[in-house]
Length: 111
Length: 117
Image (cartoon, rainbow over all chains, first blue to last red; front, side, top):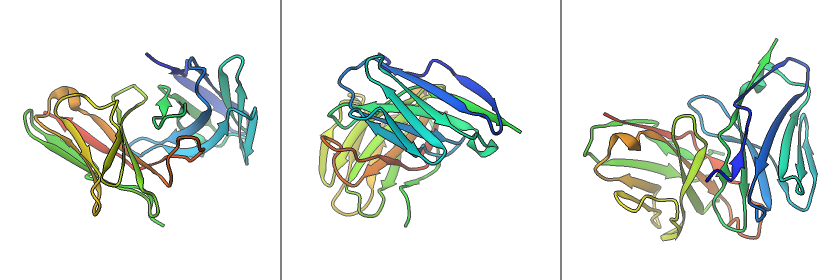
């Protein structure tokens, strides 16, 4: 039962352009959403989060947008850099403790 | 300011052996979470512990798996009589307070890659 879905397994973007990673969820009880970045053989690194009371959160080159009515969130990276190449995981939680992860989107930023 | 520490980073076991995975949370964090990642999958929650207490083990397999977080020392995830299907990356995360009702983030360690032969 996959409650968090990242339907694009991979994405390729040119350096300097915008990367948009998408995430959909099915559980309307989710109230906190996070994006993690993961390099091979390393653990996930926290990037940015957003509470359900907001629709946008920005941190430097990273912006997360939340559309609760559509149960959709997206991560925008602008401008994209080669060092951004990694797997990006969307995660969500309700009032409990567990983070529910998507399967990830592999981003490749080409020079 | 050290992050979440996990050891070993890689562990090879034969079927039927025991695997012990260790996790030291970030300084100041008293809440530990274990997740498992199978190939081509996202991370799946296993268990949430505070010092000397298991709070939520809803994601733990009913048999062979156990976890503890003693008053002193690291958190341990123990897998008895390992089978090939246990081969995965096991990640530990920590947070400073409970997430319930709050917005605290979980910070992850580098993981232990378990290979069962």
